[in-house]
Image (cartoon, rainbow, N blue to C red):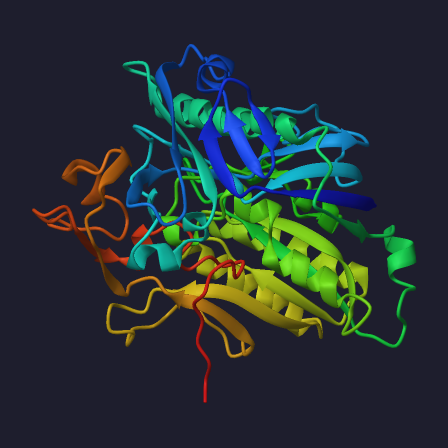
Length: 429
């Protein structure tokens, strides 16, 4: 597949009479956007703006989505939710690079997150550097939790698609082309370079731990092979309520550093064959099934090595190690990308499972480290103790009388992202 991404650099966001992009500024018609998001499941909808460097805290954050619009080729943005269920990954897509939609309000789970636009917390999240259009949506009374999650998820996707339309007829500042040939051609490319695949683990471990592939909950899929450009074009959407630090938001999926870096090194250091998407499961039988299918698919691709990325921690550590060991036993070298829950002093076991065969691991940091977030002048969402003290990474007394927060960095959206979309790692000397 051949995909062109036309990046339109956004340097500011403002409310205006018309939703448009002009001279690098995204103008948003607030009333029109709110009308576009109306849903019988949502009692109230509001929109606010947050810019880099401002004394602003957004909490609790459910998802982050980059505004995009399909201008050429099959499908549309976020197939299965906003666009039709056509295969994406080819043609041309315009991207409002630097803009982001964040969703907040009375969210479903306790494993949501915080985005600070300035201060020490801003160093841990990429969304402190984006120009954010924040959707604040609250459900009608008595709405069932899964319906609440679905309504909030759809609101974010619809908002990103609405804003993306503003870039349809704008000339991009840059156009980057990605060309991923069919499998039979890919296998013949660069015969002198090692062949490498990417095993992309999606969070699907239990209720409200959902990730969607073309609109299908990943719990319901068997591992499957897709083009890298499908991921870059919106085939994978976040719907989970897991710890903020290592949740892959929809924005993370669209901009996966692993996929982008592997394509950049394709034909130079290795031959990047493609992506095997798999899930993370609750029961042992389901874990065995998915890891067996993953190993079979990767072996069938005839590759020499694989990168495996995890999403989440604890129970999914078993899925990670199963995928790793089964590939290693087939003679396929692996590199695992994960994060750690090693205790606040870093002295505890980092993962819930391990194996001597998992001997090449990249860490995205220790989620249990303590941080103090200073008070912010503006709060978008709800920063009360009822929210802050129960978010994963917080604890009783996390919200202090002066408005500052003491918590584990687990509380910050994207702090230890297991796609490597962060600034933390470690090296053994």
